[in-house]
Amino acid sequence: MTDSKQALSVRDRARSLVGNQTSLLIVVMIVLSVVFTAFSNGTFLSTGVFANILTDWGGYILLAVGQTLVVISGGIDLSVGSTVSLSSVVAGFFMVKILGLNSDLKGVDAWGVLALAALVAIATGLVVGAVNAVLINVLKIVPFIATLSTFGAAAGLAIIVSGGMPMQGPSDFSLINPVRIPGIDPAVFDTGLFSPMVLVMIIVTAIVGLFLHKARFGLYTYAIGSNAFAARAAGINVKVHTSKIYLVSGALSGIAGFYAYIRLGSGSPSSGMGMELYAIAATVIGGASLMGGVGRMWGTALGTLILFTVQSGLLMTGVATDWKQIIVAILIAAAVAVQTLQKKNGAR
Image 1 (tube, one colour):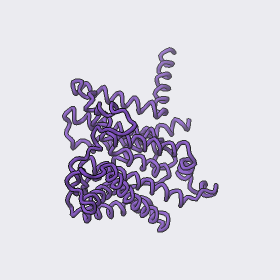
Image 2 (cartoon, rainbow, N blue to C red; image 1 turned 30 degrees about the vertical axis):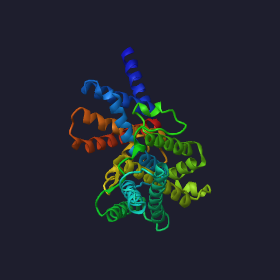
Image 3 (spheres, rainbow, N blue to C red; image 1 turned 180 degrees about the horizontal axis):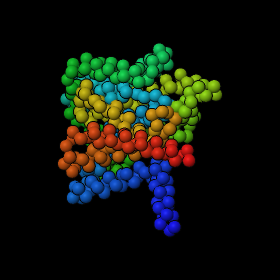
Image 4 (cartoon, one colour; image 1 turned 120 degrees about the vertical axis):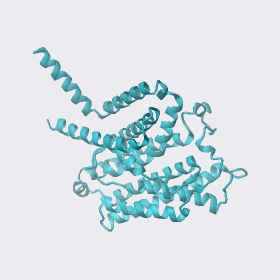
């Protein structure tokens, strides 16, 4: 009798863990860290490795944030990766061809120039997002096909604008390195853990998360993803709201494109290649349902962190990078399996 009670208790705890997305993701992070630390002779938890994970996380998190909004609303955005490529190339074209800054930023207002380049990249992303919105809400094309079309178009435009070659930028992109920002203690960046751009990514993620979970914008997003017909009957303008979501996704992809530009020092037509897969993976691993109506921003942030913890861990332990895509596929399948278990537990 005691054994059966203990078995039942263990089973209940396991179900509780599966049902609690936060606990599950944290446990996964802890297990991964312990495993990779053991196989890397303790070097995995070094400051340098963690800094690399955060830098990679910063390059992808905004794509995952935008994808989370789209997925919760019942759609999908396959164009985010090529939007990163196009935005980085257009930012490079603006810096090099229009402003003529192909060597360094000496003698100019570096922050002003970088701000202008960022706005150009964001505007590029907004254009792609607007095209997606028109295809989906005006021409009535399903999101998968619509964003697949803009994926190809943006990738092609990136090649045309750049001539198929990286758009080399100024050599002293200091914004990505530890620098001094007025009003912020220099010690924040002296550790090497955080670059200013990673800090910007964290702030933007937090702001979008607040809009999703604390504002009417998020309420409408969940309502549309759960039941678009009911949302429309309740007075929500579904077309307008989903258009806003794709615009936000495009703008966030534009910021990610600018991040790629200053991180790599050039705008490359291949800089966003494959990033859409990681954005979708991080969203699903974080608990969002591809059926719509379900998802949390903190889950997406943790999902992205898990992806790059795995990537860095594989590199540290000497596993061939060819396994990376396979690992991502396994993580997506595992996340969907967990969601299925959660639904079964909820139905009991």
